[in-house]
Image 1 (cartoon, protein in one colour):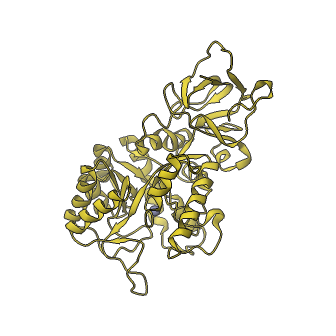
Image 2 (cartoon, rainbow, N blue to C red):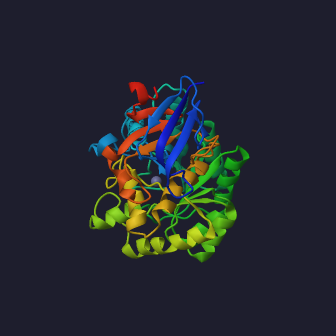
Image 3 (spheres, rainbow, N blue to C red):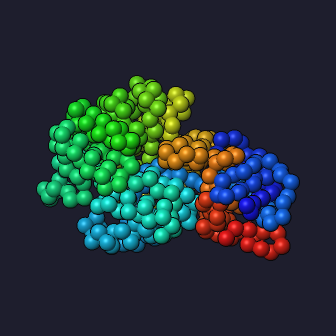
Length: 403
Ligand SMILES: [Zn+2]
């Protein structure tokens, strides 16, 4: 089988500090070696000239159905579902070109996540690896004019949540999203009861499907961790007891501080403007404790919301470093190693022998300057399954390294 041998790379493997002068061998869509190998006839050799090779990034909270590609105006949640699906495909392709080679859905409309994921897996359309979410299951929720919101599956009572979860699993969801309680920009109306939480989680787990919860208040975070929710989104009000419970459960947490950060810098205006500075400060302050406790943190946020156009995902990583004070290598681990595990796809998220060859070539070292990942001209190539899907790499003898 033809191999591609990347030489003279600065290797950020998703785990360890950068290693200069590295060799990475790709064969059949996987990493074959991270040490020099004797050349064989037919090998393509790509001299990276010191550029960085790192795993493709994972967005752990991704709404393909939010917003229009390029952040264009005119988006509405009540648009025709077919129109929504085209926008979702466009958004997914924006993510791939931005170096996000895998996404974990955080709630969809209709069956758009599941059908898009199936189309990508079948090779019908290009996109990132896609773990499809359900529609959001929520206690009955109304908009400001008193209308019941149509894109959320209204569930009241444990049996309704169980049926809702099963319906969505039957429609292809691999992650069931629940609105456990209000806060972090969401008015739910009421908190889910313990029995409702258990019903949704148990129904999903019976079918090998995971759950994720929009959750903000301290008590709700604790309840979600204790009942076995697999992914906790936002968790604004968490305290030490919550962190211990999340760590003990082995759950993932997506702190998603970037939307509140941007909304507050915009003067609290805009579609998601009801955040407060004290809550954001608290979230940032708890991150160090969460890392110490071994909580599996993953980046991801509500891109497609008015303040966060799709494509700006890596700015969130800069926010964690520059604003929250997290070490850049740690943030890179969240976006690669932890994100890879969160997808549930085997062998994803680091560059090591046997792993899937989803990688980025970056001009410069993101562990020294995380903002490089936000600069499209520095993202030389995006590689998925060992193939260049965006950008350009030239092999020796002027041949394309990867087709
Ligand atoms: Zn969301």
